[in-house]
Length: 257
Image 1 (spheres, one colour):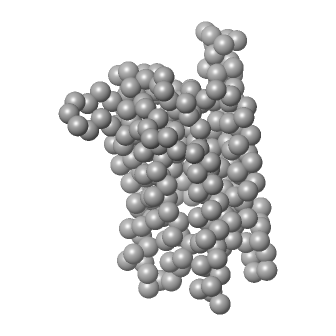
Image 2: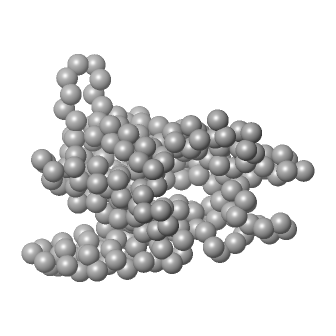
């Protein structure tokens, strides 16, 4: 779900010994695995009898989005063409919407799409769009770039809230904070922690306690070694999201017969 060219990325982890931290592709694969655990629970364990299994799986799944958000921030720094990157995210927003609506039961009976909820690719797109403008302002207004960047951030967060995307406005803010925090040597870890913490903000309950478990994802994120890792086709990362949702949609349909 992200596009990076990390061969020249800074090494964020300089550990000694055999373990050299997580590569970018390693982080993505890890996030894909825990996202699958989360989505299996959300899509298929809809009986009260499965609560003892449902909640642990959902808690594990809280680690996925911060990692994807972080990799978007890394990708924004190192992609060769941010316009094409944005177009890919937007294309997969469209491709993923029907599987998203159907796998999670948002679409009503006899429907395959609804407009009340939008999938996470749109959140990632809005986050990257914010960073694209930030980069533009950094070049054109090097001393004052944060002022127009903050204005764009507020607009994209408002758009995410209005469209009710997955993680909504706080998801966009999370991506923004990851990008800004990567430049801060001493404040990087606190800013990354803040980026993850904001995901727990809830418009109804103020703080979503379950989402606080996402802070555990700070560990693998800080252990990112700045390397791309084993060569993998980037389309695998994009296609996994609509692909696994389509499979869950089919299984859900069979279970509800």
